[in-house]
Length: 237
Image (cartoon, rainbow, N blue to C red; front, side, top):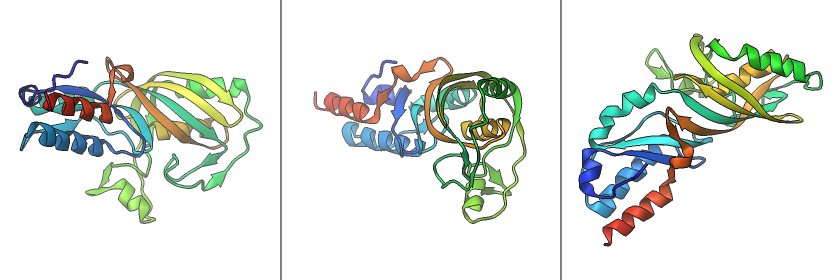
């Protein structure tokens, strides 16, 4: 997607495809873009927002909208998404990913290809999924992850989501790589947890890359460093 690095175009509204690095939050990306627009173009005030969060331990495609394009954010939020997910078998974590240390360990030697195929099939299509305790969902006005980090019991209700495609790309000992296409509201961390359960074992998410949002592909995205460099180059012309 072409970006026009001018104050007028950013105010009129642009949709930016950004490749979020690890350990950055989606809000970090938004703040960096807003500060860069102020610094290099002298814009004092401009609306900037993202169309769907991506966890700090995940990388990949984040859609950022500027100016009048922020009105399109709800449209992007409803689009289906695709991920490249790494899953580690044999252990669970409270957060369902690497944010927390393993709390339980399980056998994996009994897992066969037939069991794997059956488990993947059972998690494909419309399914009921319980979100992770370590999530931004609110319970009585408080975010679930705040309660979970305080050691409080958090009970979240299952929600209907759709896994339109779930492919096993690699399987090396305890490590799996999956290609997942899913609906809005899907937690890939919960999918990893559920896969372990279906295999009579345990599992957690060990890596995640978002590769697609609707028709927008990660291959079209630019890094935040490239965005800032292009903006600085335009400003000095």
